[in-house]
Length: 157
Image (cartoon, rainbow, N blue to C red; front, side, top):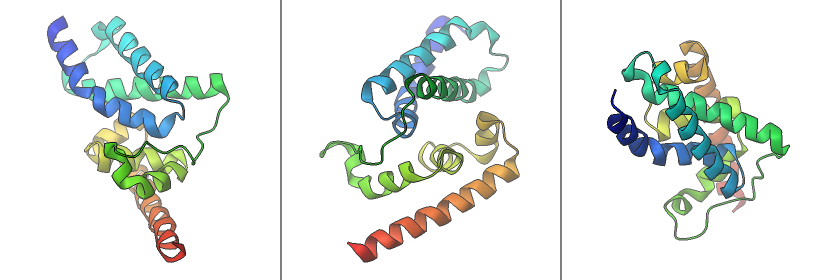
């Protein structure tokens, strides 16, 4: 893969990387730092990518590792109160986003990667280093929890 091709594919992936960071890190600056660090690491180690078909999986795995490191470094938890500003694309789905952010990470990541980012179960499995059956069961449990959270919000509101 040429340097230009690598850069083009990273640019195409960057909106997805920012969306993934949104549910992983609470502070905008931390999210920006995580994406930049991910791109830096991917660029420095681009020669280690064995198969170009799995570039997205490889970059997402780097991003998740960077986010984990950032959370440990900061010692912060993701506050549920942090929602996007009105008028942004995400604000339209604020109740769903809030419920998604309240899910445990083990349920949130497979749901986000599959339903929001459009990755198939095999890709999610590779990104999270989990068997496909585990990914499917976590998505099912996560959907059930989201359903309960959103149902209670509809009846309370």
